[in-house]
Length: 90
Ligand SMILES: [Zn+2]
Image (cartoon, rainbow, N blue to C red; front, side, top):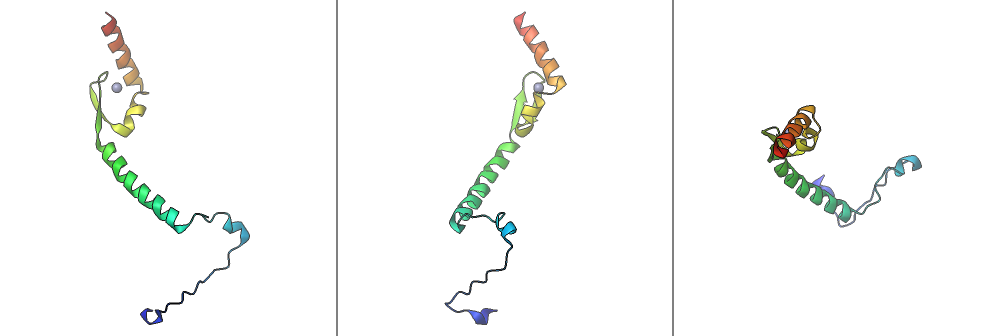
């Protein structure tokens, strides 16, 4: 394998059917690499954000950040938030 190190690059183009070419990405390698790096960078940031917890005043609970929006739609949260609103108005 290492013996075949020459300056000339031999491009081997495999035979691909025209239908399959549609699914191949047309982006240049530089763009692909940039997207990959951006994905890895934002992925780490997102994972760090997901570790944070949000405090729900209505339910008196700590909920993980990604699940908070879902939590606001739960029956318990709606019930508890309605109770809080009523008590505040009084
Ligand atoms: Zn809640």
